Length: 196
Length: 165
View 1 (cartoon, rainbow over the protein chains, first blue to last red):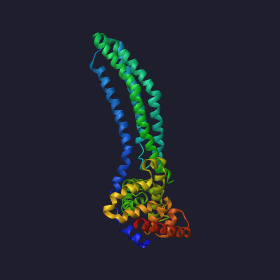
View 2: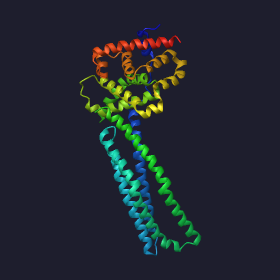
View 3: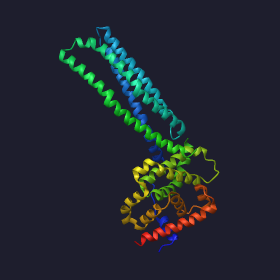
View 4: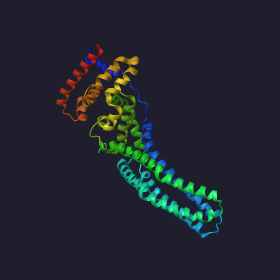
């Protein structure tokens, strides 16, 4: 038979090791948030790289038809506008440190979530329409240099790729990002709701 | 900012072990205890500027930790995922047994208590003054003494019951 004192002694003798330092702890907490920020930044960098690559066509190549220039310009406008929208959203999650301003960060994260839905829904179709229009104009001249087989290949490849991006890929990206942001919001809400 | 960092590190170093012990006693699981410790100190970091020295800082941190522990397992999702502390303890007991059978048994018995009782008893086991426990748990000191007496009895009974099996 053990008395409570002996149980207490047993508890106090049991040494527990805290495997995390104050620095590591804060870093861990920032990691998830930074992951989202990093992905958003990567998205913007990717768009800018596409912009530069397409703009390089205008600088380094000479095209005969005005339709090609219109096509490339539509691409550039669509990419630049989307990049601006992405950058505005990126600022929402990057201009507040969530460990310093938790409430403001949470508010911005929710706004970011809503904006992402808009991008993947209405804005996505505007972007797809613009890119499709750009492709049509661009290929008018380019197709004249290609054989029938190449024409068919590029036309089918472009069509399949756009259908793939608009359906399977788009749905998968929406699902993954929705879960990720929702989980982060849930966690931050749980943390914030217990103090104020 | 640097001053806040320095203060936070001091607070973390002097309180983290006790808070980890509390979280560990509540969950019986190292990973879960680490998560709870992290959440607790994150809240401490975020709210350090609001702390007005009305109570001891350790009392304030304990209160945050207790809220964190209670919210943690009450979350429906987590309950579904972890199937409550009992099962965690049952699963962990084999890992413990070779190292320290008695400690494993103690954690098992603590896990059999009600959620609030579990938190109160871990604070009692860590020898926190009664007035601090009352402050943290929001129970009057008179009621708390009665409650603690009952929890002590229950825990001792459970421990002896399991030890004799």
